[in-house]
Length: 98
Image 1 (cartoon, rainbow, N blue to C red):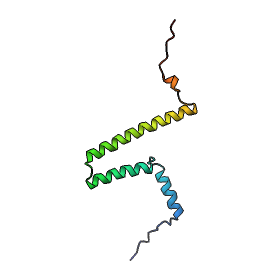
Image 2 (spheres, rainbow, N blue to C red):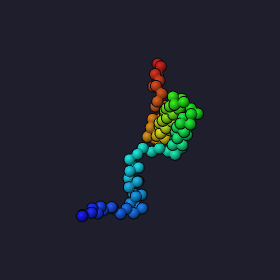
Image 3 (spheres, helix red, strand yellow):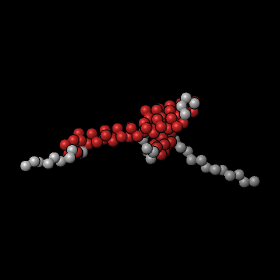
Image 4 (cartoon, rainbow, N blue to C red):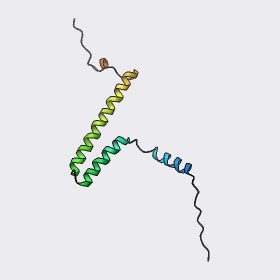
């Protein structure tokens, strides 16, 4: 009777770390602070402390507000670096009288 002898590749801890880094580099960044907030919101929902529509509304509103705040922060950083438009450039041009 013939037995199959499968070959199992030997992976070092360094190989595992490199593979994990390569896989996670394709995922969007998700800061720990946000993970804690949304995880807590989900835990409260599962525990029954919040109804799911309320948790969804809170999570969605928080995501939108934080996204807009991030865009404003990036725009402010661009202005400080001189790559964005300044506050004067955003204002409508004033007509000269006369």
